[in-house]
Amino acid sequence: MSNILTKRMTNLQALMAETKTDLIAIGPSSHMQWLADLSPHGDERPVMLLVSQTYAGFLMPALNVDSARQHTDLPFFPWSDADGPDVALKALLDATNIDRDAPSVVLDETMRADFALLLLDALPGASRRFTNDTIGHLRALKDDAEYKALKACALLNDRAMETGFAALKPGVTEIEIANVIVEFYKANGAVQEFTSVCFGGNGAFPHHHTGTTKLKAGDAVLIDTGCRIGGYPSDMTRVGYCGTEPENFAEVHAVLEAAVGAALEAARPGVKAKQVDKAARDVITKAGYGDKFVHRTGHGLGIDIHEPPYITASAETVLEPGMVFSIEPGIYLAGQFGLRLEEIVILREDGPEIFSELPRTAIAV
Image (cartoon, rainbow, N blue to C red; front, side):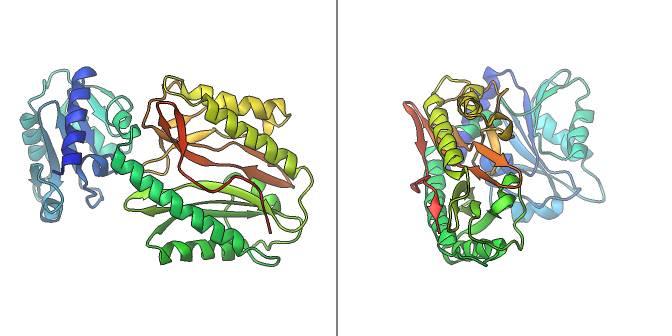
């Protein structure tokens, strides 16, 4: 294993001791990618990485072992289609040396239910929970390599956003602008994560599907887009308008800018995530748009485009240095327009550092 992966495994096993966790079961998921740099073929054949406080090994279909061996030196417990996984799973559980009577087991929340039940059937006395206080917690605290990857991707996304806005003109369709952004990603060694282009009233749908709507004078424009480089994504939203500024556009934009500022000010180590959500929401509510802010203030960003911590009105997560998350308040006016301003930040000891270098000012085209 690389030095980074060895450190992650060591940190995880130390945290398992602190949380009195006997076993963690990880399916073919971003958790496995983060911990073992392995993304095995996923189908109905059970594959799991089992980690105890002293051991880690894979339950792996035999036909995938040779390929997987190129990416990890952790031990494999292979099984064939003819024999099934039960004997191999028992051998792997024996190797973990856990208490088989009443172990404390953490399950990968993204694992297939049949994989999880296979394990739990083998450990009938197990107590079980998900990964929030173990691997999920560690993944939320980005290391320097992850920071650099996220920063590089964010800076490229800045340029993609500028390219998309520069291509706007009356008569162009949403999907044509999305294609301009996607082509920029391809030309610069990135792959598209997602692109949402919203003209006029379509911006009032927070998860609008980019379509054939044509841009016309007086339309607001919202572009939310992200790409992926080196396994890590970007995510950002900017807004503007075509020709004449729509009625109430400047007011709504100013309210959102103030909400972003309030959330940035509230985001400090030791603060609960719900307090960041409240800071943004209070600004919007005071301005009279509280019922038009219909989603959470933010989500974590890492290997997954959405991962902990989640910045919601009920989130009890205590923010720590190294956590990466979005701040993205929005106001959505049905039949008129919707605006959202989104930044991705990493929390430092003295507050949040914004990844993007692109101003949040409205872009007139």
